[in-house]
Image 1 (cartoon, rainbow, N blue to C red):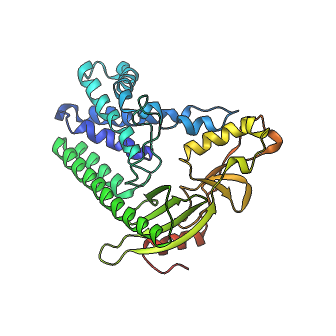
Image 2 (cartoon, rainbow, N blue to C red; image 1 turned 60 degrees about the horizontal axis):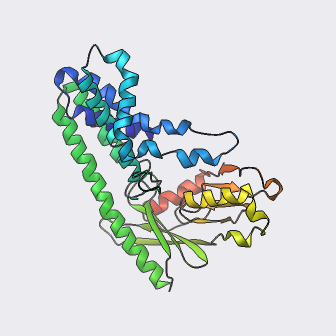
Image 3 (cartoon, rainbow, N blue to C red; image 1 turned 180 degrees about the vertical axis):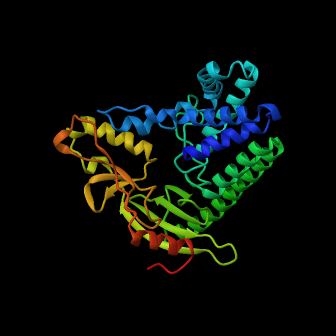
Length: 335
């Protein structure tokens, strides 16, 4: 999830067990520890652009790394706080602040290596958006109120409300999955892979992406609260098959290895961008839930077979795109 929410959750978790005397320090330690897991964003290589996306939300987000992550946070803070907090309390607040970072990211569609090294695949529950203002604001209010009143029960209530909202995401995901399954069946499609995920900053409008033998189909599902669910039929793209684009000699290249890495990162939801025939895109993400225009992808440059592929972003936040998104979010007819 976004780094602000990570820090807020860490702070509220630490507040939930803090004494009144230690509330301020516990909040600071929890917020700091909640941010530490995302330090893996600094793992990168100027010559290998895919290294960053492979290691972001990797081992630092594993459940098995929590004790070590907490120890790292404690070690950084110890010179400043060892005279104000006992080692036991400093580690406790660091542990609580760090403890939910991996799980929170696993609840999003981006996923994380939650069970590394036992299981070296990303786990994504797809129940909350990477940025969700309701969840974040709830934590912010709880943190500020608990900090000013020094009442840990406020933090505890904030956690209950926040995770109740997360449970609502589980319900919404189940609803969206059911609608998406019926949609695929109505088309006579057999989905080899299928994922549904909330779109940005809400849990009402969902993106459905499924793979058949030859194509990837995307659709938008607007879940009704007091009205019927609404389906916005989306676009489709031909599934990328590397042997159809690279020769036998080219399959031995660095480029092919990068295509494999990107395909694994994208869970197989890859296709050639219709507007850029030299780009393989990750179709799990787009600015519009009905579009196959990817948010990011890698460039296929056959002139540089032995160099790492270029990783690029393709964000389009134009007024027209925003209008279309809002219309779908409000269950209006698409324009």
